[in-house]
Length: 213
Image (tube, rainbow, N blue to C red; front, side):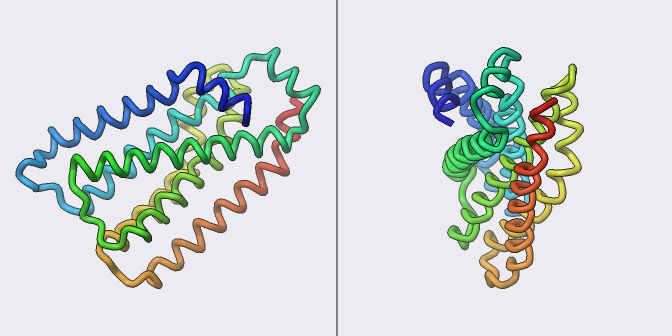
């Protein structure tokens, strides 16, 4: 974690690139939907936000293992346990996604308006989404980094994993936008928590076998 934080602080191009991506996409949405006339309805507002977060997470987390050269991975192999590697990557990517999701939500709401009625519940869905994206995509990134065309493999492997999670996040956040009873989102909340715990557990158990290869 400290190594990734230091590299990010020194280079800054990855974080700055993600912020530029978020800002440009939000501005394009502002121009495309003509928010000067206030014609963007709540379901579209919600869906566009999650699309932005999805592509932001893929671009931000794809570099987790792909940026590591073979010599550095061999050095890590000799001094650190594989469980420590995968947990550190998951924690770092989770913190990065929480930061990006927060910035995206604030800027998106400022530019396109904020129709959310239950803000705490909506923020909870953002947090679960950031954690879910980071845990799933970190493990997928480690698998894709072993292949020659890692970028394409990353997209192919992440699609069936992320889509079910994304559907539940959209449903949960839509309930928060409409100000519905929080009990209506309990099933999605428990399912997302279970998915996150399962993904972390599976990554912790299976990553050592991938690491040795």
